[in-house]
Image 1 (tube, rainbow, N blue to C red):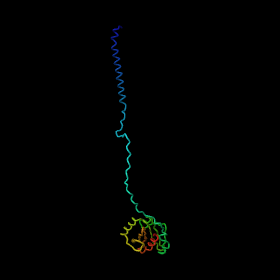
Image 2: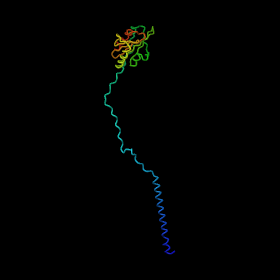
Image 3: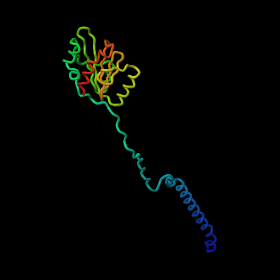
Length: 207
């Protein structure tokens, strides 16, 4: 082949090389775009997230008021049934009566209220007739005493000679003397005089 023939064939070969290179570059670019499209974008910081820690809430302020005085409460009478009315006292009242230990006063009765107020309820039984008497003593506090006065003003009759501020009604003699509340109850009591010796004796031993 002569030199003219070589020169004539050179351009087509170079053109093919240029086309091949161009195709290769296009393929590389396409693969790069596909790879970039598959990657997840970097997460953006939350708009609600604060860059600085929030301040701790301050504790609520309590009112600077003085505490109210505690209500008056019941206090134990500090005496037993044998001391409230001694064996000699009960014999002088009625020799047939005896103290019965371990008796629980009937619910809602004056004796039960006395026990609930840290007082005592003493049960006596007549060995001849079977009648029973319950004498109670307590120190329930001023509010409770005021409530007793209010209740008795509409349900009982004022009575003298019971050892203090007294009432009688429904077989029960009730006496308030100082901080003490004393009752004497029996189905056989028909008047305040029936319980007078018992209440005055109990009051004298509490003083």
